[in-house]
Image 1 (cartoon, rainbow, N blue to C red):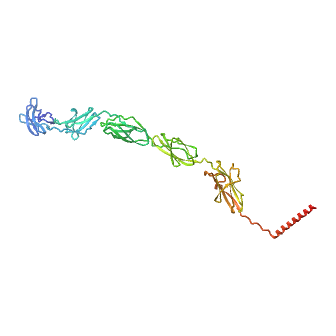
Image 2 (image 1 turned 180 degrees about the vertical axis):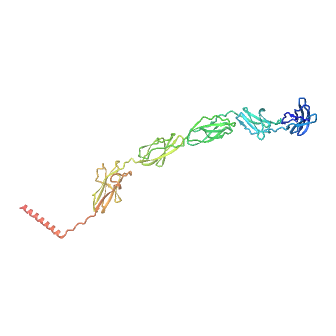
Image 3 (image 1 turned 135 degrees about the vertical axis):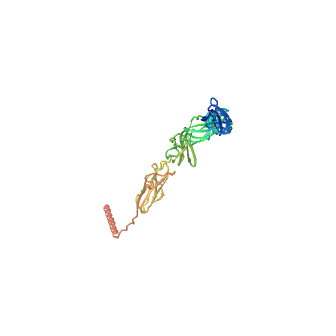
Length: 497
């Protein structure tokens, strides 16, 4: 006899939370179908005229291997059907664990991730409204985007496992959706020009926001505003023109508009002072000091002069100043210039103030006689002429020794100068001499015979002894004398007769 064909079981759920399950399928009409769970027969059913059979069975917690076998009326037993495993799971899953969510965000479609029972379906809720579902993958977890509404959103989730058991909701997590950008910061006043590259930027922004300071496209500094919105950022400027802008980013990462650019000129280049060269001026005359040609790339705003006269410090201001010095002196004049950025630089020249008195002139220097012997008296003469009418002091240097000369009393006409003399005898040999002179104010005389650069020389000879005549010379002289006497007597007699 041929045994019946093996039964064909209808599909059954792989997971269920219901103990009573109906096992159904197809088999030859009239055969008895035995149902087995984990190899143990749990019941039988007879296939009807339409070859259908079914039997309600009770499952055990965990996997249940269900199979069937047909037996015909002759007792022939067919082969077992394919085995279907049905898991009975009556345990509810744990509440999902949500990964950390931001307290505030500007993303209206927030990605929520977490872990739940593997294979379960996680339903996500916002304010108790289910908004998304996701399958939890074993060892991976779940993720889904949930829509948020402006303001406070309470997010939670629960899991539905494969057996249909629904677990509890997790603890709600509150997330604020903030899509409104903050107002642009208000920046305190900043200098328009400075010589200090370090600048402190202060102002008010949205409380607890992140403040960013830009120099054009370059972020020069950042900080956090305090609970009252105050912020302070230290930045470094670049040489030249800087265009500073400030923006803030709130806790939801919404950026504000940037402030309008503030122009700040960093000028660290000092000015170049110029007040000319060292010069001389006459006492009692007004002297002009000109610093107007000093230069700066951005402009000079202050000219400050400083100098000392007779121990008293003097200060004056202006690009051009005038001052009168009442007596001769040497005065270092210092000009300090300051540019618009506060950079300073100084320069100094020396003003030599000379006397208004003109120096005397000495001419016609000579010695009379120009040469002689040791018994000769030599008179040295020189003429001193002073345009200011001063007599002055005149000296002669002879052989490195100096002697005072005196005005010549015989010089009655002094309109062309005063003659000074000095008379002395000199030893034999060559002698060097030159003249010196000055007026009562101390101005030294000038002229062609003044100073050792105009030195002159003279020669003094020794004096020769008188000669004694011999006897012959004496007799000859006596004879000549007698002859002369006789001649004179004879001429007188002739006249008388």
